[in-house]
Image 1 (cartoon, helix red, strand yellow):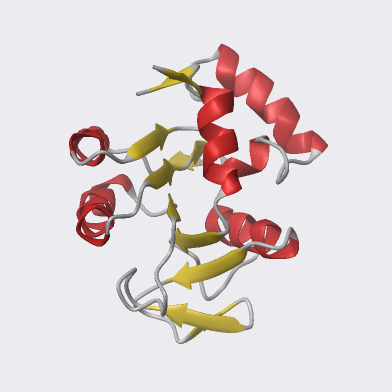
Image 2 (image 1 turned 90 degrees about the vertical axis):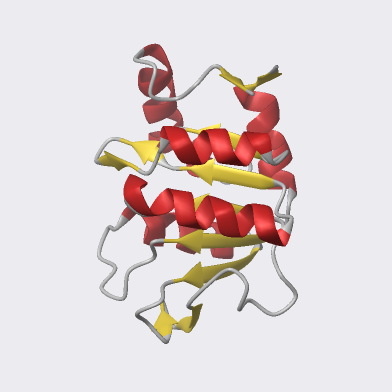
Length: 159
């Protein structure tokens, strides 16, 4: 079993990351914040939204399979009921790292998606946010990480 910190480090060591659930009308939408921060930190990041051509001024993709050159990892930021379809696509494409976002405002975690991913050899982080860990973190997210770890929203171990 891997510690959360080690799983987060491995996830953030990948450089081609897709973020699902990115909205056309961003404001402070969680997936958009993740997308922007990873882009700003130098990641090769791809917005996935089947209903948008562009997001945050960048091209959006309808599916993971439509991203040229593929990705190494995926942040699932959609409703939990759509996470199973995304996880199945990750398994089909051989994506090795998936982070199912869960923070203050909502969760993308689906128990069946977690089970499906792990059964297919995917390292699944079921909770928390990539922005809570370096090199993507900021002070606010680090503080949220401490609180949400204490309350069980951020897992202590993965796997």
